[in-house]
Image (cartoon, rainbow over all chains, first blue to last red; front, side, top):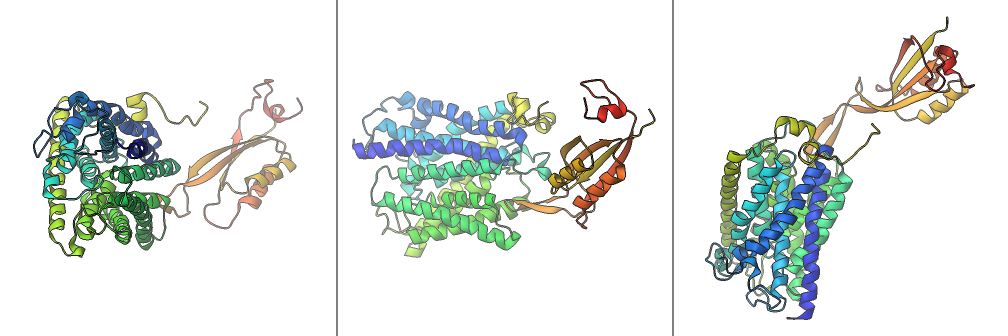
Length: 408
Length: 120
C-alpha cells in the first residue's frame, strides 16, 4: 500500500460521493415545486439501498475475479476477503476495501442519474423495487464487462476510462426506457423548472465531484491522471460553449440552464476518453458533446415524443455515446501507453470495438430494464395514479411539502 | 346612513406602486390592500426557453390594489391611478368600481363611514 495513493483515493471517493446529493439538487430544481422532495428521494434512496447491496453482493458480482466474461461470482459477497490488503488486479497501491468504496460511489450515482427519465410520475414502491433489481441485474454485469477481470469488453480492448458505458450510457438508456414505459407527464405542456438556482448548486457539486470521478479512475497521481484532470476541466468548459453557441444560434437567447447542461454534456462526453486523448482533442469532444446533447434534448426528444423529463438520456445517454465514439476517434498511445490509437491516429480497430461496446450496452440495459419494469408492473403499477400526479408526489407519496409559501 | 361606500379595484403593472401609494396618502386615502396577481388582456405574451423547449407565457405579473373610500372622491383616486400607471401601451390594466353595502372595523365594531376613519 502506498500512503500517497491511498490518501488521494480517499479524497477522490468522497468527491464522487458528493455527486449524488448534487444530482438531487440538480434534478430537484428542474421539477415543479410539488415534486422536488420526491425527486431528491430518487437520489437519496440509492445512497441507502445500493450502498448496502454493493457490500452484500454488488461488488462481488461486478469485480470478483473468479466469474465468467459476463458477470462475477459470489466469492467476495459480504466483502469476504475484501480487506485493507490491496488487490493487485485492480490496484496494488491502495487498500482493496477503499477500491470497493470508490466503486460503490459509482454504483450509487448511476442509479441516481436514471431518475431524470422518470421524474414526477413513478410510484415510490415500484421505484425501490426497480433500483434493487436493476443494480444487480444491469449495473453489476455491465461494470463487470468493462472493468472486471475477465469481463468481455475489457478483453475485447474497448476503452472506457471512467465509466462512459457503465455509468452514463447505462443510466441514460434506462431512463429512456422507463420514460417510454411510464408515458408522458399529464401537465408536460405547463412544466417548467421551479428553482434554477438550486439546479446551479447541484450542477456545481456534480462538476466538482467529477474531478474525483475521472482523475480518481487513474487510481494514482501520475502522468495519465494529470492529463485526465486537465481534460476534464476543459471538456466541461467546452461543453458550456458548445451548448450556448448552438442555443444562441437557434433561439437567440443563451440560457443559464443551457450553460449548466452543456457543462454536464461535456463532462459526460469526456468521461470514457479522458485518460486516452490529448487536451486539444478534449476541447473538441466537449464542444461537440454540448452540441449533440442540445440536439438530443431539443429535436430528438420532440421528434420521437418520449418524455425524458430531466434528460437522463439526453445528457448521459447521448453524451456517453458520443464520448465512446470520440474515444475511438481521438485516442492516442502518446497520452496513455496502456490505451490504443483511434481512427485519427491511424487505427480503425478501436472505433469498431467502441461501437460494439456501446451497442451491447444499449441493447442489454434496455432489455433488462424493460423486463424488470414489466414484471414490477404486474405486482404494483409503476406509475402513480392521476390524482397523486396532479397533487404532487411530495404530498401524496411522502406526506410533506418543500415550501410553505403562505400563512394559511 | 346616507353615505356611499365605494370599493376601487385597480389591476395594473407593479412598477410605480410606491409613488402611487404616497400620492394616495396626500389625497386622504388611509388604507389599501395589495396582492400579486397574474393576468392577461390585450398585451402580447413572451417566450421562455428551457433546454431548447419553448413555452409561450401569456399571463403577466400584475398587482391588484383594493381601496375603499367614502369622503375621498372616487374620481380623484382614478386620476392618481391613471397619472402613475398609464404608459400608453397595452397591459396598463383596469380600474373596477364597486358600490359596497357596509364596512365593519374588526377592532371597534364601527360601521360604514366611521369604520374608515382613523381617529380612534
